[in-house]
Amino acid sequence: MATRTARTAWEGSLQEGGGQVELTSSGTGTFDVTFPRRIAETAEGTSPEELIAAAHASCFAMQLSGFLGEAGFTPERLEVTADVTVGPDPDDGGLHLTLIKLTVRGEVPGIEEAQFVELADKTKVGCPVSKALSVVPMELDAALD
Image (cartoon, rainbow, N blue to C red; front, side):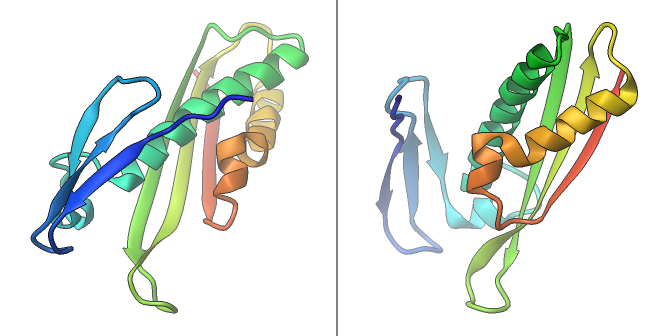
């Protein structure tokens, strides 16, 4: 099976320091990260949560496409958005992921809305990233366009 690697180099303190996240396996990019930008209301650079959201949205789309195929359907288009929220951890201090909201809209010829939603629900618990993040509360909004 495949292994993918990302690397972060960090310098300085949590509040004043910063780092760079490198997508090492693919070589597709290096992104600056800082703690103040991580918790800011507006995104001015990427964050671990945005990278998790990207991983979750892409994994969900692939897995749902697979489940649709197993059911005899070929999607024309799936649009998946993952909103990952971070907040204070009341138990241990620091931060934790408080919610992942998945929104999927699909164009799938021949499928009924109820079956599409059922397969999206199956994907919510069945895609590998969902499994890895199963300790985080997840919401799903699935519908056909």
